[in-house]
Length: 155
Image (cartoon, rainbow, N blue to C red; front, side, top):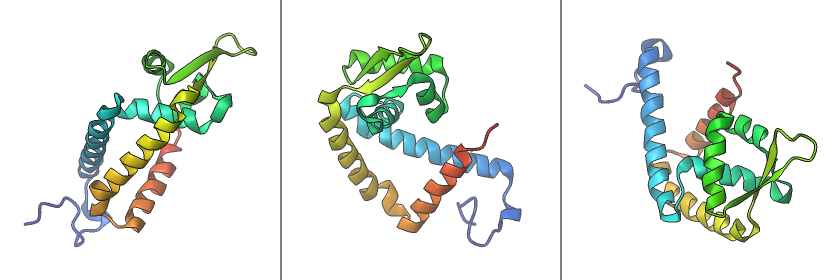
């Protein structure tokens, strides 16, 4: 008997929703743990890295905290705590929104820009050599496209 929950011999009709849920959970946990381990060398958690990356992508303008929370699928309360930590580490800066006093803009500290590129290169390389070496480029691309579609589901 195979250890696989979803062997090639099975079709979608043969796998239960709880088996799929277990696969989702195990895959998420494996990826999160690996990334967190690699990012700890830079004093970052996975979620902090996602925040830093998204903020870095917005350039000098930055991003509104509400938009950042929506992009990450998290609450403003959680994000506020994470931003305070990143601000204390001098990775990001926050400034008031001149048009709306209830919100602020978050931008990457310019002195951290090179570090973001370095972390991305190292993490990408390590993921390719380890976890992503277990799947084909096409499987990874499909996985990312499926996650993108699922992330847009409005519950």
